[in-house]
Amino acid sequence: MTARPDLGPRPRLGYTASAVDRSAERRSDAALLAQMLASDRAGVYVAGGEMVVLKNRGEVSDPLFSVSEAKAFGAVRENVFLGLVDGAPRFGFGIDPAAIEPLKLRDDLKVTDLRTIAVQALVADEHLPPLAEAKALIGWHARHRFCPNCGSPTKTVQGGWRRDCPSCHAEHFPRTDPVAIMLAISGERALLGRSPRFAPTMWSCLAGFAEPGETIEEAVRREVFEEAGITCGRVVYFASQPWPFPSSMMIGCHAEATSDKIVIDRSEIEDARWFEREELALMLARQHPQGLTTPPPVAIAHHIIRNYVEDGTNVFG
Ligand SMILES: [Zn+2]
Image (cartoon, rainbow, N blue to C red; front, side):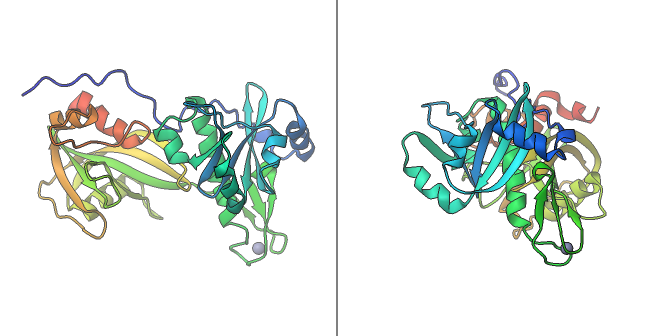
C-alpha cells in the first residue's frame, strides 16, 4: 500500500462561521431599521433569482454595495436585515431576476451564482455566510408571496424575517429544510454514491431530506437503505452546514453499516459502491489513479469523508 497523501490543514467549510450578529431584537423596530439603512456604514448584498451581483475586482470580487449603488440596479423587491458586522448594518436586496440580465454586460460587475462564488473563491471567506443568509431569505420571500392558509397576498414585516397575512392574520416564518447527509462505514471502507448530475469522476455521500415525524438518525438509516440497500446501526452527528439552494440545512453524520450487499435504487442515484479508506484519501488529495474525486471543501461531504479518512472508525467515539 502506498503512503497516504498529505491532506494539508483542514479547510474551512463553506457558508459557515458567520461574523454576522443577527441582532434579532432590532428586527421589530422599523424606525431603527430605516435609520440603519440610511447609515453610511450600511452594506448591501444583492441577489436576483439564483444570481448574485459582485463588484468586479479581478481575482477576488467585492459583494458589498452601498444602499444607493444597490438601488440603482433596479426595483428592490425584498429588503431584508441580515444583522451587524462590527456594528455596521448589513442588508440583502432581492431584485427582479430580469433586472439582473443587463448587469451581466457590465465590466465593473460580475454576476454569477452562489455555488460558483463559493467553489471558485470569488469573494473573501467572510462574505459567504451572509450571502447564504441573504440568498435563502430572499428566495423564501420570492416563493411565499401568498398566504398558504387563505391565499391572500402577505406582507413583509420584522426586517424580512416574517410575512403576515392581513386577511386571516397568520404569521409565516422563513423555512429551513433539514437534509441528512451521511457516510455509511464498514470498518476500513465506506459507501459513496453518484448522482447523474455529478461530474463523471465525482463520488459523494448519500443524502436526503428528513421527513415529517422522523429523527435525523432515522432519516440517515432510511436514506442509506432506500438508495443503496445497506442497513445501518449507530449514527453519529458530525457537523451541520447552511446550504442555500434554496434553503436547506445539511446535517452531516457517520453511520455504522450493518450489511454489505449494495442494491441501488436507480431512480435516486446512478451508482453506489464501497471505497477503501486509503482510496478515499487519494480522492480527497486529487491523486486517485483513475482521477476519481470527492466534492470540494465548500461542501460538507468533503469534511465528512476527510474525518473518516483521518480517524477511521474512531469517528464513532
Ligand atoms: Zn391568510
